[in-house]
Image 1 (cartoon, rainbow, N blue to C red):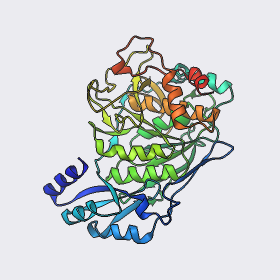
Image 2 (tube, rainbow, N blue to C red):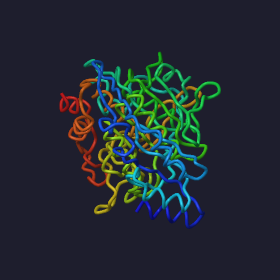
Image 3 (cartoon, helix red, strand yellow):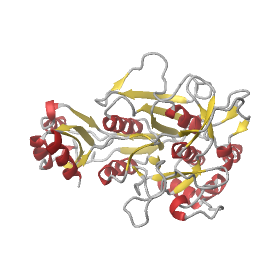
Image 4 (cartoon, rainbow, N blue to C red):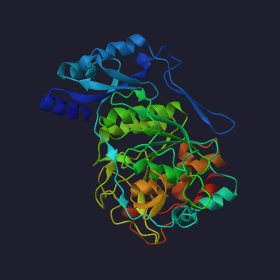
Length: 408
């Protein structure tokens, strides 16, 4: 399937973007270094060490990309670039190639703005209360030492609620290379500031409480906007693995089910990074990848009456696409807006960071937990009080305290 999609693009334009998943046994510098090492320290921080690869093996692949322009992402174990017909033929048969993947374009899952309150209410937002985040904080679990990777449109790092929340940030160019932003780190289209606030927003005197995990270490990468999203997504994922993230919050996607990209999310999961991904805002019987992959914790949206939001995506029974796995608060969600202040927004993009923040709280409570254990604790905590169709709501709405009890 992936080769056919690449071939179709080459037939149409003479060249195509392609991802090559490396045969690690072939490119590894030694037989003992075919997989990244992953360790959790005593404080719950994850350390990953990328396998050492042979330079000549990577260079041998590079010559088959157009202009010998290829980017290597060592933690993912993939290379990416543009290929023509000759390059495709050579790479498809190359001994260092495990699999070739078509590279689709991704974009943010646009929310629906639902107003800017004149005077935001004090105290936790309804979404935080619904998932019982304040009750988890009272038990001493606030996300401390847990790294969450937020891959989005950027974030306003000068916002009072986020000023001390961003542990590290990165901006990648269209070649997947890090660039240094000029001036303060900003959000490209407002999307990322809102989602980041729901994960890690700090309490500001006189303001609302918006962050699920107020002591989490948020690392933020700008991976959408300004062209070549695929290369930047790969760069962001590789960077998140390098920086020791435990949770990945991803509110981006592309319409439909794209099986080819699922291998990338499998690699992410194999390296003990829990992908929490928005299912999409396209309504029933339509979903977005990678939110519809079985390898991710996919999230749909509910309102404050525990009803599934009308635009929350869900799969068609019997289709290859799956999800949502759970639903979380995603309607009239109050969070940060660039330049200061707060706004309400609707969407599965708003629901996803609620679940990402909950996962961070659970890792804080049990630092040596596996991603499967945390995911299962969340899913098994779900209830469906509204009697919604399980196709639309998945397992239901998580209960943070029950999830914590499940894990401990």
